[in-house]
Image 1: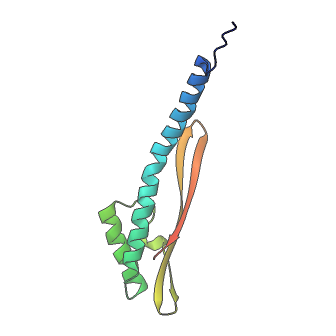
Image 2 (image 1 turned 90 degrees about the vertical axis):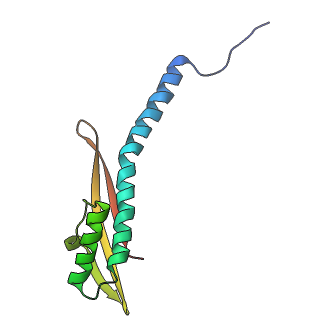
Image 3 (image 1 turned 30 degrees about the horizontal axis):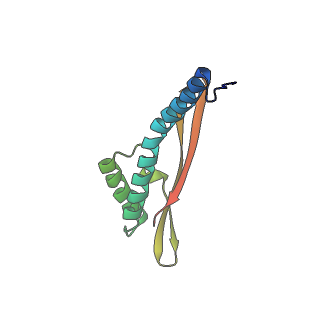
Length: 113
């Protein structure tokens, strides 16, 4: 009888573990940027209640201090009117250093709800 084994080799296991570790490292570095994006969206939604452009920016900056937002400030917001509603929109880039000269660039853009 010819018993042939099947499965993954040790080198294959090392390769899969390496790929999963790299993906986990990138995910662990990207997760805080996603949490910050959600905080920025929440602050922009809160800030749209302001009566003037200066008040909207002040409300956003105060919410940014509470939520520790460092990627964007009130002066970076685009504030427009759509009908009778105030819309606060924003866009920014976040770079995550991977290794050596390699970076992961994430572009975030959003607006108040």
